Image (cartoon, rainbow, N blue to C red; front, side, top):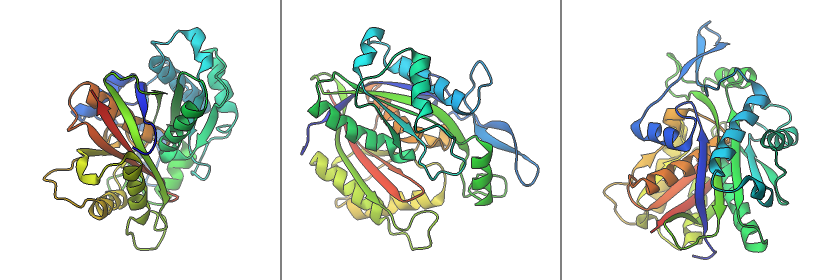
Length: 340
């Protein structure tokens, strides 16, 4: 490995199919899904279906993002005394700035409101990571740098997002990207929050991130250029190089794909351009099938599922490729390996 690995120590997850990491990951493992009718109506007069998180009060907008994030952080940091939380930097993953219908206050107010909700001021180096689905990989890279360069025990990565907002849904419906009875090549919008506690490996049974890679795809989903998966291929190759391994040495993939054919085709093309030895199986898991297209949560959910699968011993192997793609062309990949 070209750089020191980092370990995913614990997780928290709040989704439409479970309000904790164990319940959500068990539901995802079983293929449970729970889309419901929303209060929003599409252009045909039918209710829009979405994966909504059922909380005990009907919070909306930024308040709901804060509530969900606080639940995920509390679960993730359950084994750390509350008075030590202030020693931990928090990297808050939110929607990219060009996302349709993006809520105001995500770059400033949301972080302050989350600290107030939790009753803690997080450590220096805390920051906002506003890059949507690839935010988790960017935050992992930042966490690796913080842990290597600063005397802090841990870094916590938190993601909170919702596409169940009228202006967001309206924009995607206009582009015919929402899954409906008439549109089969689309996704179901979702929401939720997740958290990952990151630290240096301690020699125990741990899921470690050993390689990270980034690139940009010119032929993105809204573009007109032919898709060759150049961006994702480059990101995967960089992650493999960072982890000092080859594609055939990995056992399966977990991605943020939420239903659109473009992203399945991209994953297939990237695999064909990076796999140099024949493998009988190279499965592709996509948790969004159960929790919906959840924006910035997607990458954290992918890593939380990998963590649960390895620790619960139902993973298809202990060497996993994860990758994420934004609509604007940003691509990220991360190699995670379970060390026993």
